[in-house]
Length: 245
Image (spheres, rainbow, N blue to C red):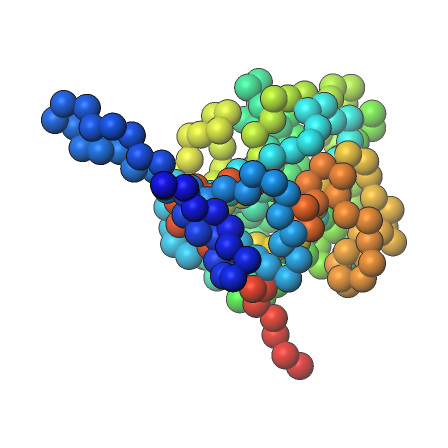
């Protein structure tokens, strides 16, 4: 039996894949939710409601070779520990493009090709939406983050080498191997929305338009308004949580 996104429900319905019973072993049932065609998630969010080393969303990228990148997303959590925000892995580098919150040192880590840059001084308050954009360019080797519209300094990580696929992009878990190696205590618990990825560096004005939720050109690698993805285990699609003023 296979069930996918329903137009009548804000929640992604599970696709249940059953496998025949083998001797005395129990039937193996794997719960996934599928988006075979691009889905418009405007006004929606992924909800990761519990700590686990299984629940995640796998995003299908339209490109396999990157000389520069801009990633933007919004997240909402109350976690008081380390947690992943975005994980892109290749067979060569499990942290080819990683965004990670280091709770102890109160720093955002940006790993490019397994080389780390850390950015402190971010007011990463719990229980509120934060917009985080990250840019990287292979020619200069520089990485920079924009936290709620405020830019960091630029830091050097690596130069001269592209990120080359096959890539696996995951929300909710940090990959210690290509598509796996998940750690319960690095998982994301909370809500995530408006994930966009571009194969070039956005201007500061374009990033500000994203932060302010104004008109901007959607990502040409990952586009929240036309997203191909697969949900594994307990992750929900809900209407985006908004605050009233």
